[in-house]
Amino acid sequence: MLIITEELELETTDKVEIVEITSNINAAIAESGIRKGLVNIYSKHSTSGVFINENESGLLDDFMDAIQLIVPTNGNFQHNRIDNNADSHLRSFLIGCNETIPFEEAKMSLGTWQSVFFLEFDGPRTRHIKITIIGE
Ligand code: ZN
Image (cartoon, rainbow, N blue to C red; front, top):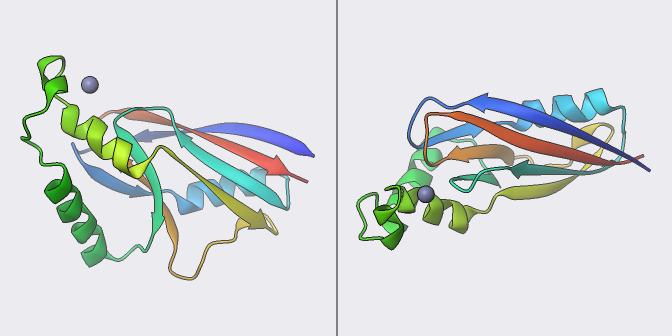
């Protein structure tokens, strides 16, 4: 069994932004030389998220609308007394900071309509995503 770790650096350009990273992850798997196993994609931040869903522009807008409904930007949150980004943390808490996906033949075993996304909730800034590839 082999374990390879890599770090993906992303420059986000907006306060809230969805970035598809499927090809970045598949490239990291291909480079690792590992053919079959599991890949974990872990965002090292408390105001971002990683999730899997369909890359359809209307649906991505719907996600943003749903997040805004559940955690409004100008909600009356206690953490705003500290650094005014409680909404970013709460959104991250709902989405989660990592996904683990099986892969075979050096490619993630995603469903036809599944893509992997990084979710920025407090940009723009530089983000670091740890990719851990375990397999043989
Ligand atoms: Zn904060």
